[in-house]
Amino acid sequence: MYDYQINRERLLRHLQELGNMGRRNDGELSRLVASDVDKLGRDLVVKWMKELGLDIKIDRIGNVFGVWSTEENQNKKPVFIGSHIDSVINAGIYDGCYGVLSGIEVIQTLKENEYKAKRPIVVSFYTNEEGVRYQPDMMGSLVYAGGLDVETALKSVGTDGSILREELKKIGYYGENEPGFIQPHSYIELHVEQGPILDQMKIPVGAVENLQGISWQKITVEGVANHAGTTPMYLRKDAGYVAAAVNVFLHDMCIEVPNSVATVGTISYEPNAVNVIPSKAIFTVDLRNPDSKVFKELENRLDEFLNKISMEVGSLIHKERLVRFEPVTFNQGIVEIIEKSAKNRDIVTKRMTSGAGHDAQMMSRICPTAMIFVPSLNGISHNPKEFTEESDLENGANILLDVVVDLSSK
Image (cartoon, rainbow, N blue to C red; front, side, top):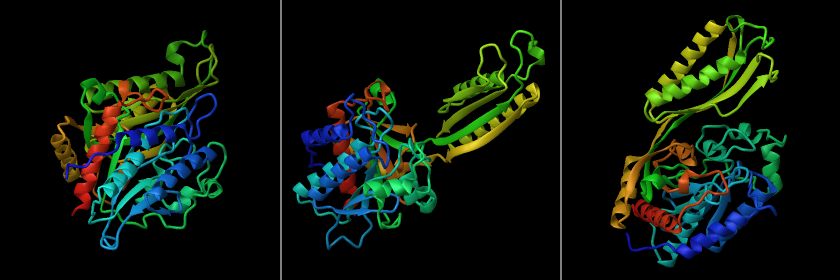
């Protein structure tokens, strides 16, 4: 089971080639979903899949599947390897792409070694994981897992006013298959960590056992605009003060409750003048925790604080739910296979929680799922400086190879 080795140079070459696909003259890489540059990336990956003899299938939301099956195993549920190749604005080259290209490398290695899989193996990439141009993020895998109606998703309006269905048709990736048309036996996703833990601890591989719940809200505070110099503090309905107090509350709460994080990532004031008390504050809250019970308690505590400060200041507060995904616990058996592979290869591992959302969290709704992490230098991701050492990339792909052999041999 542990005799196979991926071709390191081939994997690295593919990463660089895809990383340059759609790069602008100024060096920026922005492969937003369903754009012309997304088409370039998709076409390149599909070309590599076809060169391997994989059967290419595309569903209506634009998810792409390269299927390796034989007459002997074609009636069994397949092992899925997956991730995404769309990017954020001004991105690095590893996020998502590493998992997809490692999947292709795994299949190529197995074919070269004349491996006889008892199950089909499918390498897949999913539409709009990043959620930059259309909302929600992880859209393609969410639709595939049945969590979002495909027609609703296809009607999504982009930040540029475009309609997702029309853009997929324009780039040639509006497929005929209904999402969910292949029922997976299992799903495994290899990804760079996008955080600092593995890099700081000098541990080469993370066995990801769970994924944080994610709650996004937009909060609007209605205050009263007035003169900044003549209005006493005790007579103010200051929307800016409320926004600041909420931010401090979230920070203190998450310091108190282990494994919790919260971020006020966007904020705007009206009238946004240096000498005017804000009459309105609009801000977002990103709240995360990997435990379902604790996650709900944090949301309740935030609600209670909003009610309390609304009464204290005399301001109306409106909440709008943007996104909410429950925490995910990955399949214990697959996590143990990851650890077993690493041990056999003399690679140190650490059990981890994923702080970011991934397609794996959606696929876990329909099949046993887990993830493998490799370090991100200084925890940097969603950034051109995103970097992972070649040896770590090789380690992760070899462990993915072992896991796929284990899952496809039963």
